[in-house]
Length: 592
Image (cartoon, rainbow, N blue to C red; front, side, top):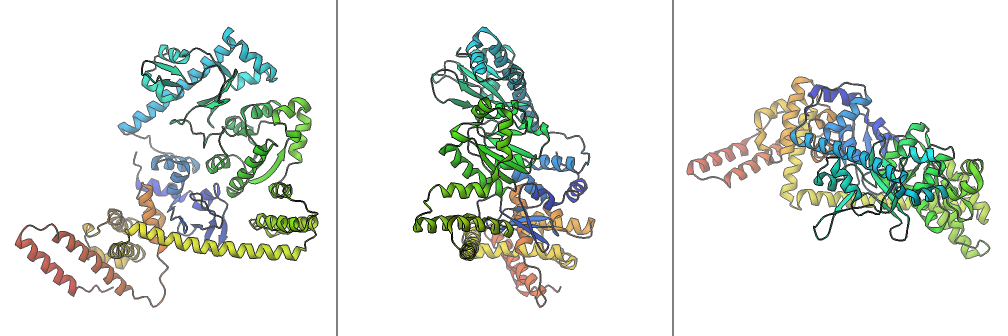
């Protein structure tokens, strides 16, 4: 629904963009701006800026930009009304009852049916587990030493071997075949002659969202066959790259430290042992979207992956994702190649708690992993190890942390601390230079993409941006331009709308605040275009000939408008009119 403009602005003003962005991206202040690693593209040196004064963000690397609404839309993959709702709730500002469009209402009804269908499916699988068909599955859970009350709490069930048992059950419950197929729990036969269940002969683990609603399932096969674990497909409810197993239970624990593990049974065993603040990834590599989901609930993460080579490599890949998202990260591993589930069964909860207490800082873990590849009794290996360790330490922002670990590497190798420090300084200078070059390359690339490589089109775009910028900065400039320019003179719709919105803000608010102007646009691409007007335009310096700049931009826009009209004329009278317009334009001089 469309909310009143005044309400949109009130909500925006109660949600400082620095506070919102900081929930997702670690920021460092430099003047009135804050900088961090861009969440929208991979980078090693911060190019993502948040302007606290003007309340917008802008990435000098990839061009991502917008105000607090735009940021939330991009991070949470939601639309403008959803972003408004989230920020309104955060600010405790009540919203009027929404009136959905037909399409939005249909989508909401479909989501509601899918939620209910997954709930029914969970009950079906749970009941089958308790029946004669579930004997083998119950025996498996007993061997895994899973307490019945925990199995019940997690809703664990069993999918029978029957080909279309769930399909028949859901049809009997009144669900249409179309809705059942949308759930991903049932598939059409290849010969189009019928339907079959996705999960058969598997122990079923319901996957809950953070609100405790079933959004998908994971199934562990009991007999022979591949894959060992099978997850629900991507649906409107479920995404493997965003959902985490057990998050609803970890959220209820209300702890700012989470234990991150790899598998369903690891998560459940740890929970059963008395550690409710545990979550597991869902058979996919831990990624930035997972981290953004966790960021809402925790500040610290203990990474507990298997101690084999695959688990170690997975931990090494997860560390930069977590650190880049602002988490304080420690790492621990189960000894002797066991997984957490095995360790707890053999050693108990007390010994497991010691593993958590003795978790090491992620830098110590990374250096220990590097250490395994070298023999430090060999000079060449000491050089290579120290060089690789320096590359890891160069990524640390804290000088104190760097000094501590430099001393540790020096102790391990016998290399002077000053030599390691010198290597790190060289690496950081090289990284900064590479970032500068990459930023310049991206800027050129974006400009080419934006203007199609045509100089005249770029000039026209720049002229539109400049006039929007000058009109927003100076009331007297806008007052003059509104007498000279028509909205249709702007060939790019977003700048035409922005020019109109600037006038509305001057009339109603008496000023044009960039973030408020951006809020006039619900589309993320439009928000980006308007943000660039202010992010790319440098503050005016003394000596800038504002009058000359305005005149040049107006003439570029008006001349392009005349050219467009000329291409469409059909009569002599129209041609004569345009010739006269061009003559007036040549003589035009706007006094500022």
